[in-house]
Amino acid sequence: MSRLLVTGGAGFIGANFVHYWLQQHPADRVVVLDLLTYAGNMASLALAAGNLQYRFVKGDIGAQGLVEELLVGEELDTIVNFAAESHVDRSISGPDPFIDTNIVGTHKLLKAAKEIWLDGPMAGRAHRFHHVSTDEVYGSLTSEDPPFAETTPYAPNSPYSASKAASDHLVRSYHHTYGLAVTTSNCSNNYGPFQFPEKLIPLVLINILHGKPLPIYGDGLNVRDWLYVDDHCRGIDLILQNGKIGEVYNIGGNNEWTNIDIVKHLCGLMDEVLGADAGLVARFPQTPAAAGKRSDSLISYVQDRAGHDRRYAIDATKSRGELGYLPEESFQSGIRKTVAWYLNHEAWWQAVMDGSYHQEWLAQQYGDDER
Image 1 (cartoon, one colour):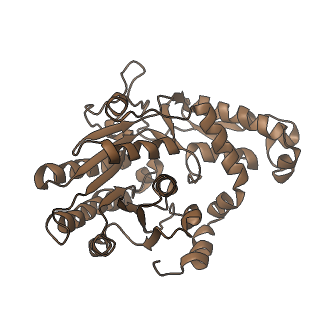
Image 2: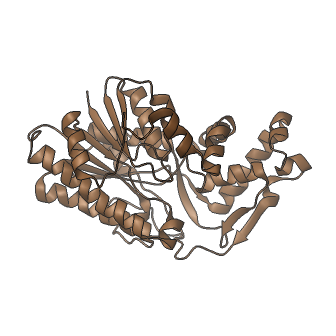
Image 3: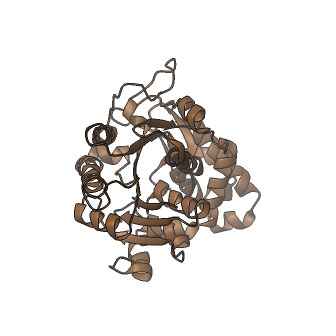
C-alpha cells in the first residue's frame, strides 16, 4: 500500500488522477494539497469527498512547514506533483506566478521531501517524488523533425515552459546531489473531464453551445499531440510502479492534430450531437444549430500568440518498452467521452464560467478549514 500526497489535486489532471488512483488502488491513502487558485476547483473532487482514504488540505506547496507536517503526520511515502501554473497565454501577460509556483514552489516541495525522507524522522524508508512536466520544455519542432525523446535538449520558448524546465532540472538535481528518489514524466496536451474552459477543447465546446466565436491563432496549423487524461494517469501509475529511480519518461498520445483540424472535428461532432437532440438545442438557443447553421461558421482567425511553438510531438518508445505503456483511448473515442461529459456536467462549467465555483463549493464542502 502507498500513501500519496497529490499536489495540485484540485486542478484538471490532478483531480482526474485522484479519482483514478482511488478507484485503481482503493487501499491507498490519498492526501490532496491545493491552494485553490483560479484553476483549482473543489467541485472536481466532489466524488472523492466521501472516501475515507481521501483527505483535502487547502495549502501552498511553497509552505514547506505544512508539507513536512503532512509527510510526517500522514506517514506519506509518495509525492505526485501536479501543482503548477500552466496556461501559456497567462505566462506571457504575467509570468511572475509561474516563477513563484513552478520554480520556487517545486523547490520548497523538494526541500520538504529531503528534510523528512532523507534527513529527518522518515529517513531510510522507501519513498518517491514524482514530478509531472510537459512536452513544451523541449521547444518547437518543424514538420520534418522526429518527435521529442527523453534525450531531446531542452529549449523552452515561453515563460511557462521555461519555468517547468527549471523545475525539471531542480528535481533531477535533488536526485543526483542528495539521493532523493525521483521520477519525472513529460506529457503531451491532455483533454478530458474537469478541464478549465480557457483551454482549447472545452473552450470550443462551450463557445459552440453559446454561439460565440471560435478563435484560431494565426493560420491554425500549429500541431499538438493529444492525450486523453485517463491515459496520462495510467502512465504515471506505471512509472510509480515500475519506473527506474532518476529517470524521465515521456507520455504521449501518438495523436498529432493541427489546431484548425481539431476545431473542425469538434464542430462536426457537435453538429452531429446537436442534430440528434432537439432538447439540447432548446437548452442552448444561441448555438448555430438552433438557426440551422453549422458550428464551423463560428471559426474566427485571430492574431497569433507571441512566440507560438509550431509543433509538439512525443516519442513514447521508452515508456512503451520499459513500462508497457500504450494509450487506450483513440482520439475518436476520447473526444466523444469528453463531449458527453461536458454536456452532462453543465453545472460544473457554468459555475467556472461565472466564477461561483470557489465560493459555493468552499462554503458547502470545506469552509476555510482543512479536512
